[in-house]
Image (cartoon, rainbow, N blue to C red):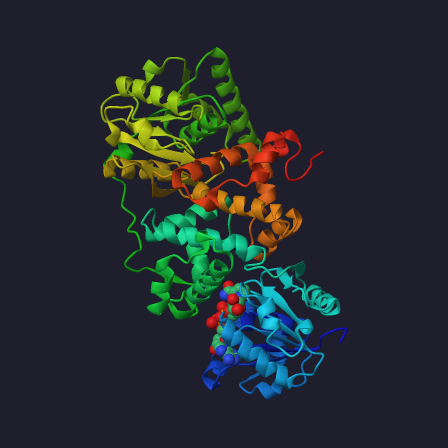
Length: 591
Ligand SMILES: NC(=O)c1ccc[n+]([C@@H]2O[C@H](COP(=O)([O-])OP(=O)(O)OC[C@H]3O[C@@H](n4cnc5c(N)ncnc54)[C@H](O)[C@@H]3O)[C@@H](O)[C@H]2O)c1
């Protein structure tokens, strides 16, 4: 068969199947849905009504359009109803035996030239294909969740899929207003292969109580601009589905990072499958709802410990990008800031940098000219570290070199008043090494700001094994006073954001090096399929390949996790001097 599909069968109308049916019907196709029993038929209809109802509420569809859309979808539980369809998309649970059984049933009913497609996220499409009469008409059509929203579809071509079938499916995907990419049959395809290692890692962090679920999620939303945090996303995907995907990726690739974190199985066994059952990592007001309600794990926002409030004078050590940005943040929040620069040149740089930053804010109308003067009035730049004797908080943002930082902490220990908080904004060094250079490790915390500090809402508050809880609490309070969103975590390489981000970036480089997909397709998969603001290669080029490699090495050294070993391709690019935008050449070439 060649040409346009008009009638499409969808088997299994759960999370994905209902979304796929909605997309097809919205674009004028007739949909014949098949569910397992009458109860499931009713549930599927309810899901469709609820989802299209939300579209009406949001003004995206008129009530008449919605009625017309729903009239194009018929759902029942008899496979014989699929006889007239030209294409069947199965979206039953992620079990190979079940999917093979479904295909065998469909095979007996549909015309010999109808196309059979699976929405599997991770199972081998080839294995499904060979269970049918004509494997050449079998492909994967992998929609992303929620299917009505995500603009990307992976079309999986096996070694036996007929080219005409692939072309027809690609044309259909375009007709649905989505971008197709044709990929080979490898577990997880592009997006899930990159996404699920990261999700599993985030679950492991949660399981190890490294950070709270809200903090893990906020860190990735605010630190990386992701549309959802990983644990909230697991709940949306469905923990049972996520488990099966990870398990099947692990079994195909034997990558330890894909071995499902044990807590996932435990939660699924307990019936906590995510939003669809009303309980997953979070608790929802009803099954299927997206509204989170408080439960036993919901943090009680500890109201400001007195210490946080009495902190008013801050010392910032350093004169680079981070030091200037952090100074601006503190001064704008009303703190008195004493900046320690290494010499007159650095002092001038701080003052000029600060003035320029504030001018930009005034020009954008975000700062009152009168406030500009007040902010500058709160900043004093000194060349003498001894001037920090009276500060309540000393925060260093000097070069990322452990010996330099340790020497600095030893001096701060001597200089600063007893009870002052000593903080580092290191992104990759152990905070405990700074603490151990002092005689008051209980007063040392990490305050990891993101670049540019005035714009980025996130601050990681890092507690070492010796940080006093009240010091960490005061640091959290300070971050709140700055208008930032603090997240708390333990003192491990990469804290939350970098520990989750860089292994994923490394996986993307490994995928490229393996020639599974091109950089453009990988970037598109993550942007359009997962709603990421940038693809991994765009981001690597912005961050700098050398900086990325350093972080990946630190993670690899600390965790000795084989999957974290930096990709040789990245090493070679750094050696060649292809460092990204700053050298005008990285994964892409810039004018
Ligand atoms: N959830 C996601 O984020 C996501 C994203 C992309 C692809 N997928 C893939 O889509 C598929 C479906 O996942 P889901 O999350 O929608 O699962 P789900 O559990 O929400 O829905 C599966 C549906 O299939 C029905 N079903 C079970 N056996 C059946 C049978 N024999 N005949 C007809 N219907 C049957 C169930 O009643 C249920 O309604 C899986 O292969 C999954 O890997 C999921």
